[in-house]
Amino acid sequence: MIWSLNIISSPLHRDQLLRWALWGCASMAGLILVFIVMFLVLESIPALRHLGASRFMLDSSWHPVEDSFNLLPIIMGTLLATVGAILLAGPLGFCSALFCEWYAPPRFSSLYSRFIELLAGIPSVVFGLWGLVVLVPLINHWHPPGASLLTGILILALMILPTISLLAQSSLAQVPTEYIRGAAALGLGRWATLRRVIIPAAKSGLWTAALLATVRALGETMAVLMVCGNVVQMPSSVFNPIRTLTANMALEMSYAADDHRSALFVSGVVLLLMVSILVMTATWTSRTPRHV
Amino acid sequence: MIRQIILLLVSLGLLLFHAGCQESSTSKPSENKLIITGSSTMAPLVADIGKRFESKHPGVRVDVQTGGSSRGVQDARTGLAHIGMASRALKAQEAQDLVGITLAKDGIGLIVHQDNPVTNLTTQQVIDIYTGMITHWQAVGGSNAKIVVVNKAEGRGTLEMFLAHFHLANADIRADVVIGDNEQGIKTVAGNPHALGYVSIGTAEYDATHGVPIRLLQLDGIPASLETVRNGTFPISRPLTLVTTTQPSTLAQTFISFATSSDVHDLVAQHYFIPLAS
Image (cartoon, rainbow over all chains, first blue to last red; front, side, top):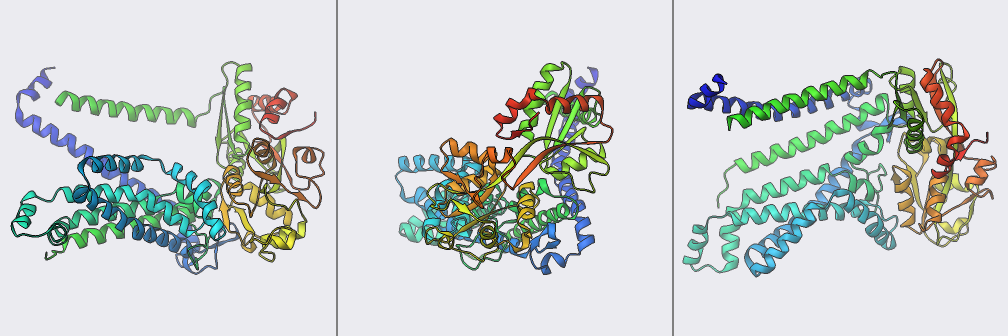
């Protein structure tokens, strides 16, 4: 009791204690990440040692039970689905943010924002189920088999649209009013203000929006598992089924043993690398000064 | 502020301590706890049997965990579980140090959308379709549409069974969709009039009678149903096996004799499997 009284009476001690507590919390978050990465790497070492890294690129196919471990088609599938989704959802989300922030009547804009927030809250398995029972039959009607890269792209785009739209909107809203007033004082129209002043000023926020959306698309599992068809192959058109890294792990992990299990952890490490490269590129590009 | 921080740290510490305690309690199975792991096909049924067993033996806890047939066999061997579940018969090399007791039987049947006019496929036709030699329904008496071949993901018991019966290697199969569990397979076929898949007959028969637009196909003229699996005429069937070491504990023995007795036949039937005639 006396001890605690002492602490409270001395502001220096209080600061110190708070510092240690915060330091502890922060390092705990960091440590958890380190542990997860260590776990992933340790679990994937047996496969890398037995099979060697080259077999994950040179084997004829992905049939782990029959001893072939080519991950390239799966990596390709993951990349194509993610890039497709970003190309689709990026412009859409960005434009809807511009519209809401600058053109829409305020009441409509706030209603629309609520809708987008609701969209963000829908669990991915619901998207997957909807894709499986509505979208897949629809696309199958047009071009069989229905479960395909295209379906995956559409579902992913729908899922990352709120991320892009909400983040873009908030970064547009954060542009200082002085800029806008300055533009008005120069006699610039709305479009010119947007293009020359607002968008360049909000650029880093817009990039962050795209980055977070990309990471979400890369990591999405349940929905793509249900709509992509999960066949391991290099797709020759958007109507071909593909398998993503996440779906690969989710499908096979609980049924895998030995090298197969470890190979699935290798696909986890690959995914982690892809995300890290992405984050590093984004940090690097946002650090280089841009002339407005 | 300080008090809150201290409270937070103390509760965090307690939480970790508590988690640690729980950890040690599961790793040391007590006399009255029965751990069963393995096949996800069998888990719901065994969990129900476990509940009934618990009510008849007060103080006993039955803990059922899934992880696939391979894990069931492995856990029974290493002693991580008292009983393993495998939705297949034991392999010769497994039967050397383990004992398998058949709990019930299940069949694997081919399913199509109910609008598909095809009612029967021969063994050769199934092989040709799955290896990509036949690509259109027309070739087997159906409409002029491309067959959407649905296959199971690597490592699943149903896949192993299917491949073994048709003498296929998974690398030879040209699939359009690869699915995980039975339900996903049924949803895929129900949503696609040109799809062909294979799932547990029990699950398919249940869904077909409850309004899901799928139909079980005959194989070489033999209808796929619980009845034909029961009387042994349907060729693709599998035993649902409980696996133990050669010297199981008394509790495990009591559970196994209860699970194979006629006391649980109603539960087996509820899960659309076939109880063994006693």
